[in-house]
Image (cartoon, rainbow, N blue to C red; front, side, top):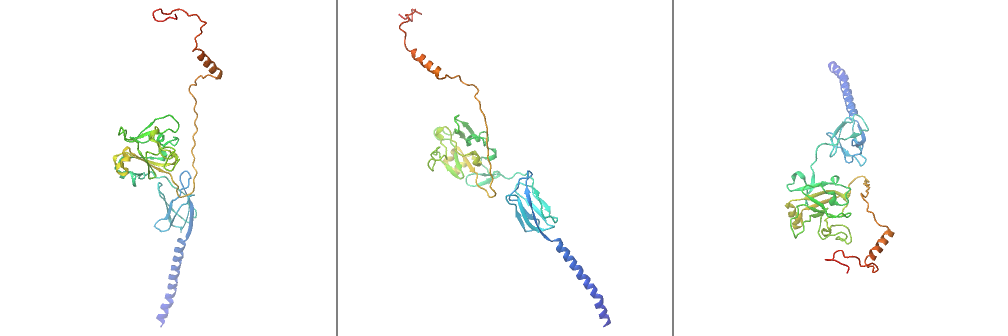
Length: 323
């Protein structure tokens, strides 16, 4: 009985100390994993907000994305590591360290993304295309040009663009494969947002009536009336593979135009302006009203012979004489 009583007295303090140590460890672990809400902004190097940046917890499941103003809010722990990633930018990892506001500046990635082009029936990576396709993006176009053909001058290898008239907004001839026939047309086929335009569409008489959509190859050019500012990309199919997609209409090549469209996010306003000044190199000396009237009278009187003047002398008796 005495031995058992001693064991109980000796074991009682030991049990209390173990329980106390476990309680302290649990409370410390709970304190270390205390949750908090982290907020902040994600911007570029020029302080422009970035929309759609993925903000996730490393080795975790929760995450969020930035809105149109670049702001985010995420519920996490004070020792978590946040990963910020977006297409075209280098990913960054930041430890929370019990901070409630974390602002991040993402750096542009130097890696080249795979360029995607349209080939008529699908969109493929340019590295996977075996045909002859040239692509022109909107930023490469000369947006100051009033017509599409003028904006393509010097932008595509193997495509000839020639101006046929000096009139304002006059169309230019585009030859993708040169002149392939004497009688048949060498005009390329235009495909706008997947809709092919036939060669019988002329300015002012489109399929919808009195619109201005289309081109007229018989008026000195084969231009289409689309504002270059509304174009997102242009793909030109130059080889015979385009005929397998669009048939004989594509014998002169295919110009695939993708126009801009609305995107998700906050609305933005963009505008372009151009200011130019021209002066005449040499002015023609013209007549005023009085001088023109006198010139007209003098020219009219020159048709009548004055009978009061003598018959004159014979300048050449052999060939000419007033007698």
